[in-house]
Image (cartoon, rainbow, N blue to C red):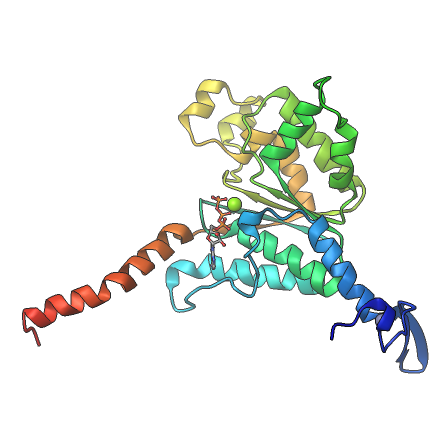
Length: 277
Ligand SMILES: Nc1ncnc2c1ncn2[C@@H]1O[C@H](COP(=O)(O)OP(=O)(O)OP(=O)(O)O)[C@@H](O)[C@H]1O
Ligand SMILES: [Mg+2]
Ligand SMILES: [Zn+2]
C-alpha cells in the first residue's frame, strides 16, 4: 500500500510534523509531502530524457587509472558540492573536452539537491535557451522573453549546459551578460559546463588592451572568453569554482570496452584453435 498524504500515519494528512531537537521543538514539513515535492521538483527541473540516467551514484571510474585523476577529482567535487549546499552557494564551472562526463555530473548534482534537500533546480541547454529567447522576438510566437527567462532567473540552482556553444555576436554577449549578472546579483547558484578552454588572455591581448581580431582568434583555439566575452568570463570566476576535467571520451571508451567484451570469446576460440598455451 502506498502512503498518500491523506492517509499518512506520521502527520495524519496535515503535511506537518513536530520533531524534537534537543530541548527545542520544531515543526517541519512531513516526509510524505517532501517526497511529493521531490517528484514535482524533479519534473520542474526539465532534465532532458537523454540525461535522465545520469546520477552521481552511477558515475563510474577505475580509481587505479592514472588518466582519470581529474575525472575522479571532479566526481569528488560534485559530491562535496551537494553536501555543502546551501552553506556554500558558490557554483561550479566544469571545463573539459567532449564526453568526459561534465553534463552527467551537473545533472547528478541537481538530482541529489532535489531529492536530498528539496532545492528548486533547473536544467537549461545554452543553445536552446538562446534560440527560444530569439524566437520570442517573433510576433507569431506567444511566449515573451520574460516568460522564457523567468524560470531561469527564479530557479535556486541553475545548470547552463554547453555555455559558449553559440557563435558570439553582440546580442549573445548582451544576453549572457543579462543572464549571469541577474543571477550574480541575486546571489543564486549556477552550475556551468563548457567545451571551451577557460584560457587567460594572451600577453599580446592584455598589452594591446583590445579584443583579439577575427584572424587572431582563428589562429588559436577559441576560448570561453571569445565566446561569451572577457568581462563575463571573469564574472564567472566570481560565481563559480572551476573544475577542469581531462580524460578520454566516455562514449568511445565504453564502446571500446563493450567491443572488447563482445569479441573476447572469439579471441579465445581463435587461440584454442591455434593450440597456444
Ligand atoms: N564516468 C562516467 N560514468 C558513467 N557514465 C558516464 C561517465 N562519463 C560520461 N558518462 C556518460 O557518457 C555520456 C557522455 O557524457 P556527458 O554527456 O556527461 O559528457 P560531456 O563532458 O558533457 O560531453 P560534451 O562535451 O559532449 O557535452 C553520457 O551518456 C554520460 O552519462
Ligand atoms: Mg555535455
Ligand atoms: Zn505526512
